[in-house]
Image: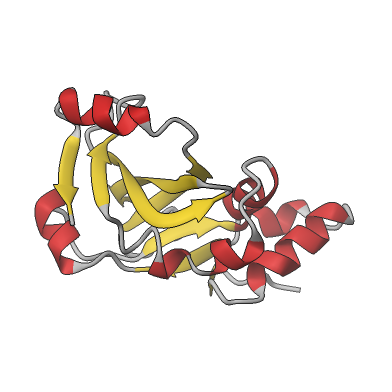
Length: 160
């Protein structure tokens, strides 16, 4: 059986990934399948001075978001409408040597903590497709004081 190179993030996909993970049936071959999340809004693209490309991740990263970061499947299924419609964008402090790494702050909350996504902008695609914005993770940020610190450090790029 040939696996698809890229699939779309659907409402049911995160539940299926979580179910397969919990049953020990999330095969290694499936982990590298890319998942299309959507596109960033024009205002964010303009602020970032980056092209309008697909935001993509992988089954492996979605499994990590669901399990390690305990983000519920319904929230993961709605990433295109939450983290891709951010209320703020910050330069990544932890990836300072990667100028294209940004953090998108969502209005969505997980157990009271704001949901953030880390994205590396305008990345080459190993599957001979156009470049993409690669979402490396999404997680609840349990220290909201960090946002004030990031702002003070000059890391705020854009805010709604």
